[in-house]
Each structure stands twice: as structure tokens, then as C-alpha cells.
Image (cartoon, rainbow, N blue to C red; front, side):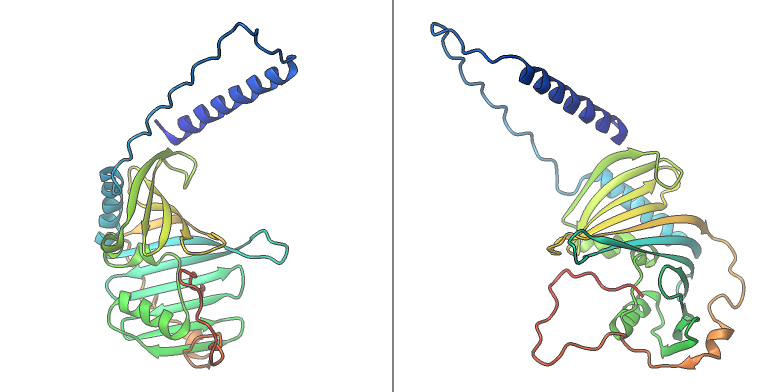
Length: 291
């Protein structure tokens, strides 16, 4: 049964319970006759059997999506990322960024983040990685490892640069999570995400619980929603994928910027100062900051 059908059944059941409770509340309550014996207790039903921790259908969908992405020598897409952040009154606030991503395997990446917040551009050409802030006319350049995965790790480790769609662009998306998979199950289908029919799966790996909407026919990610399991606030992080193009020719010069080459240089370093001596480390499971 589809997720829509399940939701409809739940709503009908809940509505029936509420109507019955309302009608019962309006009726005068009468005590049963003294001669009426008490009703015997109803035996509770045995708990439903729990399925396997790694459901085959969910794994098949994740593997098919991974294979589709890994086979593409070039790809481009738009990623709209939303991050929840604590507010002073208590309820979480949501911040959103939109990025246009272009990739050429095995060693080229361009990410243009236009809004919200400060605009930024990231270029990687297999030899160097460049972080450019056009409004401030500042650029940071560093030598880079020869593979995309290593470059992404180096960018985060040295400058705190992190992209929420990283799991979709690595060489083997499924292989990156498979060793740490704790849970995976199929939820159902949806027709309201990404303008197409999607299969919904959920999985847990690397301390993160993720729900994915993956195109039923094209096997491309359309939405990912994640919660870090050890985050005490259970803040949610979401990425919407659109404008997918796989296998298209990438124009020359895509992975460099003449404007960045003329900008004022700054160190390729983490924008936040380190903790003071003796400070406690951040709690495990705290999500990395976006670029």
C-alpha cells in the first residue's frame, strides 16, 4: 500500500475514534446492574514480528540509485539544503541554501552557492581546490588530492567546507554507507516530491538516520532528510534535488574561475577559531557546518 493510502487509513481510524469518544462523552454514564458479571479481560494480541534490520527491498533501491549515479561520468543538479538551528525562544529556525553542482569524474567539481547567506563558489580540478567569495572578492587556494573523495575530506578537515549532498557525488554512494548500515527499510511510494513518483526508504548509518525519496523510474535522489541520532535537539537537515542532467558534455573552463583568480587571497583555513585551551570538545554527532 502506498504512503498516501496508509495515511488515509490512519486518518479514518483516528477520526472514527474521536467521533466515538465525542458521542460517548455526550451520553450520560450509567453504572452496570449489580447482577451483571464483570467482563473478562481481553487477551492482548502478541506483538507483531519485527522484520529484518536490513530489508532487501530498501537495499535494492539504494543500490540501484548508487549504480545510476556512479555510472555517470558527468552530472549536474540543483541542491536546496535546509538546516534547523536552535532559537532563543526554543523552537528551531530553518536556514536554506541553494547550490548548482557540476561534476566530472573522477576529479572535477564545481559548486555555486547563490543564496541564502553569503554567496560562495568552490572549484576542484584534480590539482587545486578554490573557495571564492564573490561579494567580498576573497579567494582561498590550496593544493588538493587527486581524487574527489579525498579532496572533499581535505576541504572539510582544513577549512570546514562541507556539502550536504556529498553522499550523492562520491564514486560509490552505496559503498560509502554499506559498512556502517544498521537499519534499512522500505516505507512506500510518494507522488508529491520532485514532480515524479518516488520510492521512500529509510536507513541509519554513521550515526545518522536518513529518509530518502528516490525516483521510481530513474533512480535519482529527489529528497534526503537526516537527523543525527546523538543530537539532543534532534534537528533536521534536508536536501531537495532537481534539474538532474547525467552524461552531458561539460564546457571547457567549467572548473575554474577567472574572477576568482583575480580576487584577494586569504588562507585556506577554517573560518571559526579553535576552542580555547582546556575547552571540552563538541558533542559527538554534531553536524558539520555548511560552506
